[in-house]
Image 1 (spheres, rainbow, N blue to C red):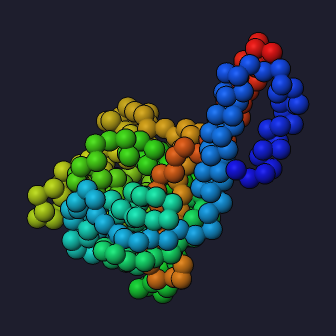
Image 2: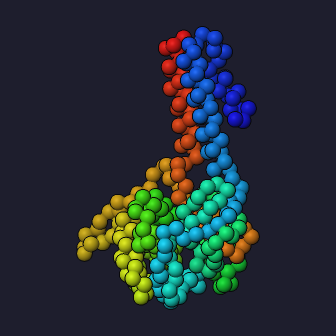
Image 3: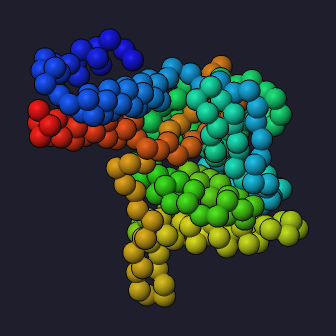
Amino acid sequence: MHPACTWAAMDVFGCKEVKMTKSAVFGLKSVLSITGIMLALSAGSAMASTVTTTSVSLPNGTTSVNISDSSQPIDGGGSSITTGTIGLQTNIGSLSTYCVDLFNYISTGNNAYTFTPSTLSAGQSFTDATNSNANATGTFTVAQVNTLTALLTNGTLQTQSIVNTAALQVAIWETEYGTAASNGSYNLTSGSFDFSATSDSNSAATLTQAQAYLNDATGYLNGSAWVNATWLTNSTHYVELLTSTPAGTQNLIYLATPEPSTIALFGVGAIGLLAARRRKLI
């Protein structure tokens, strides 16, 4: 535990430890130890300057889709694009990530990559400066960040099957590169950036599921009636962007939970509860 945490805790409780029962002393030590670990873990998660990988895998399998792009230079496109979860083994644990960069690549196997992590926010770039299209630029908007957060917060709770995880990736790409209607909804199969199924047996089901996920995250028109979104965000989840350093590898996103501040607050709450117990035992 960092000395500052210890001294801060002592200041809260004062110097009357001699009047505490043995059970209270034991409880205090236990909670302080647990809280110290929680604070250390939360600080490490929030303050890590780099994320490094030892291996990259496709843990849930993949399927393929076709992407058609007819207008915007920031969009990627092509036939039989692989879609699915990208699993990273890293210095901060195992991460289930998704691609936000259609212009660069990442390879599976025992590969070492380095990323700079940051909370996803409006104004950040989809891709880095080194890509297959020199004109490929583009930044996240507030609406996109909100939709992506809703997608990841709820989509990762679904059964982690080939179709479901591939659909979540497709929904992420559509949110980035597609054009939302005035009501904020998306249509995967129309517009200047759209998808079609391949001969892969899971491809058509993936697109159907991806559209359902987008409807859940943004709301949609059912005939002339508007159906509100059911996939909402909450304060205990946030999306983290992994920017490749040096440039040239896919940028990725993943759901980071619980939020570091939530862990810290839980630890402080545990101390508060023990303090109340202590007053009764003195």
